[in-house]
Length: 356
Image (cartoon, rainbow, N blue to C red):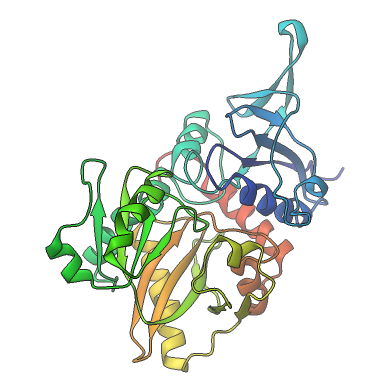
């Protein structure tokens, strides 16, 4: 008799501002799961937080600029290693046990350690980093603090908590112009503004605070934007992909440039000197280990004209949309998307859940 298939739940959508991109990423993952080995259960989370049995990949693409969303479906709840289907009149039906979860969630209420904690409590293995690494990497200020403590190079920044109205004159003088103002715990470039005149700062802070009360103000770095994928294998090895360089006609790498602008180009490998390219790869692995990362991450860098490399941030559940760099970098490095998904699942199963 053949071995029973491994039951994989792909969870996507969620309550964050990155709901739509999570759906698009999930569509790519669902389309690249090895169905000879894995039985897939798509579970969507609506913007209001309801968990529902969701349709497959065909309904989750960006169509004509319209972003997808999880809207309705049969509600389910997580109970131990299984999802329980809620039916009319209070009845319920137990679905098959789940062996592993791919929490393909971006941003708050998913990528930030929240669902990771839920899955740990339920005893279900899952793809990606644990609670600590997910929470630290979601909070860009804490990421920078930990990276700096580990001796990794980071750019100049200031943090505004909910009690800080704006930057002091001393802080402005230290950062200089231009600066980028962004929510401390968000992604996909939501809530980000480029400020070229201090008169624009307060509006930019208010815009960022529409997403997150904690705001990061970063000094602009003159240079090139480079990304690098990190992947953990079932035997514990951690490797870095060939890096990608991002080029776009936009003034900076905003949401439209990432997902809607057809002028976006990714050069893989990035057109860097060999020594700089290898430095990026080494720093990517170092940063991943510094935050206690697991499974996968995308590490974003600035490379200056002088060849200096600064770590910008880590994404512990990087986008996997058709325009996303993470799967493309690994494809060029020699691991196709289907093999990548299988590796992530196998690594999660080898790791298990609980303290490690």
